[in-house]
Length: 211
Ligand code: GRF
Image (cartoon, rainbow, N blue to C red):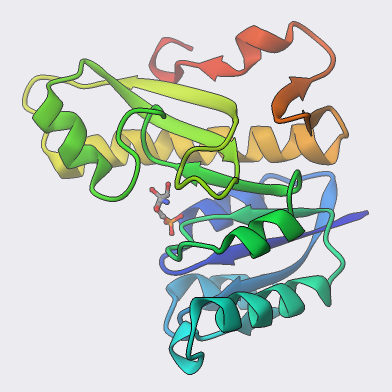
């Protein structure tokens, strides 16, 4: 079974969706930069090894990233999944895991990078919002997109209702993309995303409300 590692900072609902998906791999560890991350207990309850690399214990971003990379490498993962991991990673860290580092972001990138994406979407008045899974590069939320899920923005939506609709799509999209990767179908080739097998391109966009 191919080992993979999940990095979290908080609630861990995407982590739970990944763990519940029966992926063709083995989750070797869940690692958090925050000791109080609720997702740690959920992972432990499933019998998965957990670790904390607390960013506050390190004087620099580089020192934290080096410790984090060391903890990850202990598990020799073929895939590292950022699931609500709220730290900006250094270029050195990203290079070390290049091509096997994925992130989920709650917007249809390249729209609304950074934080408060649902508020940004409401302020912009977009009618379509969603989430993206992308390979991580040094550009914040800027790496090559592996797949996206779109949801409508409905009249009367507030940040909370929109976030819930997007989160439900995240929980479907991320396991799908992780499965592609672990099956050896998805890879980064010369900075471009390649998905082998079936009718690849349509599968990389899905619209849950229209399923
Ligand atoms: C998700 O919306 C994820 O896309 C974003 O942060 C949130 C984390 O939620 N990066 P959870 O910890 O997976 O529940």
